[in-house]
Image 1 (cartoon, helix red, strand yellow):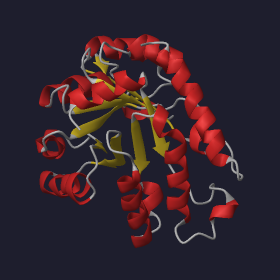
Image 2 (tube, helix red, strand yellow; image 1 turned 135 degrees about the vertical axis):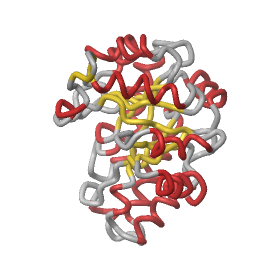
Image 3 (cartoon, rainbow, N blue to C red; image 1 turned 120 degrees about the vertical axis):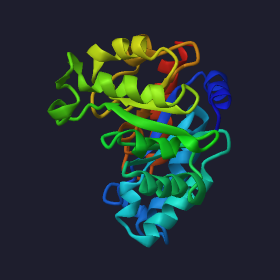
Image 4 (cartoon, one colour; image 1 turned 60 degrees about the vertical axis):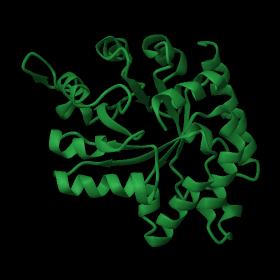
Length: 266
C-alpha cells in the first residue's frame, strides 16, 4: 500500500487506529480452544468486529512463530482474511547483515505479502536498506520505545544528543516519508511533539495506548500531521477486552470508543 492509499483510508475513516493481533493462545476465550485453529478463529472474530474502525492491523509474529509450522499457517490465513484496503504490519523486528535482511524482506513482502515490517536498526544502514527496495512497501524502524530497558541505549547521550535522535535523523535520510515509518512509544509524552518537529512528514507507529497507559488525545495532539501521520496501535485493550463468549462484541465496543476519540481530530 502506498502513502496516498494509506492517507486516503485514514481520512475516509477518520481514524488512525491500528489493532494489534498479539493473539496469545493462553489468553483467548476457552470456548475457542476446541476449534481446529483456535487463534485463527479468534482473529477472524476480532477482525470482523473491528475492521470498520481500523486502518491497520499489526500481527506480532512472535505469537505465531512460537507455535511452529501451524503458527505460520495461522499467520498466513489471518493476513489473507484482513480486508483489502487496510494496512498490514508484520511486527517482526528483524535486522541483520545485508544478505540476511534481504531474505527477511522477501519473507514479509513476498512470501507473506504484508505492507510493512518492523526493523531494528542497531546494525546500521546495510541491514536496513534491503527492506527499502520494495515499491509500495514500508520499513518501520524502532525509534524510541516505551519499555523500561530503553534507557540502556536509546536515551543515552551520543555526541551531545540522545541516541534515539541520531537514529531517527540518520534512518530518515536513508528512506523517504513514503516508505519509512518510526516506532515511538505513546508513553514517551515528553518526546512526542519534539519527534514530530524533527520528522514533520513521516508516519509514526505508536504503541503503548491502552493497557500500557498511553492515551489517544495526547498522542494526536502532539504528533498528528496533515495526513494523519500516525498509526496508534492498541492490542490488549481491544482484543482482550473480554475473555468470554461476548469477546467480539466487547472488542467492537472498545475499538469504536478509540475511533470516536480519534475522529474528533479530523
